[in-house]
Length: 259
Ligand code: DGL
Image 1 (cartoon, rainbow, N blue to C red):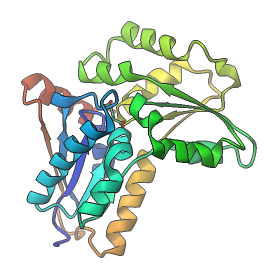
Image 2 (tube, rainbow, N blue to C red):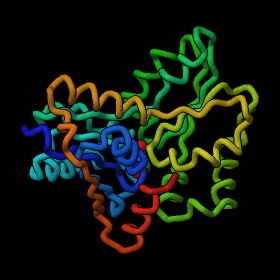
Image 3 (cartoon, rainbow, N blue to C red):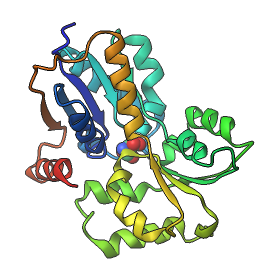
């Protein structure tokens, strides 16, 4: 496999663009093929088998396009499919999981109170139960499904402050937020809400996500295989989507270039 081959990055829709743009900025020599499956989003309320089937079909297409690695820029698809994808395909497949370890480590040994915001499927799956088991004896962890936050991004309503704040109140008003140490954004769509969360949460509550860790992991894996693109290479990003409407393509572009 040539080190100049592209990296396939996919999500159920537009959330993974938050990952693609961070790969682009950290690894400017790489060619990125981004695929969003907005026609089938959201994945978070589907069954694991449905998500697995959709994920296999996306990775199959990436492989046909000669990718050297795949990043599943979706916690939900990772929960449902990463194990089987790794068994089936002979290329590195990097998944994502809610950055609970990072949140707990921020306490430097002190017990933490952490809310993990993610999709219903991510929070229901075995992978998350295993993660929870590793940290729940020392820390207090609350699992909060937030499916509407996915829909708002896909519907292009992210700039509608009242609408977004209404959703945040719906999901977080039952917590004593002053007693919380951090909130984990355990879905790539939620990264786009960082500023909303910052305004909504008390200032002592930290906001944690797994994007940087995922990209670091991708770099390490490619480097260990001597598969990083040459420094002389001018990288590129190609964004495509199963929803081929102008609305989705414009939304994808604006999210990619959003601050
Ligand atoms: N962006 C996805 C994640 O990280 C899933 C959103 C969805 O389709 O429900 O989990």
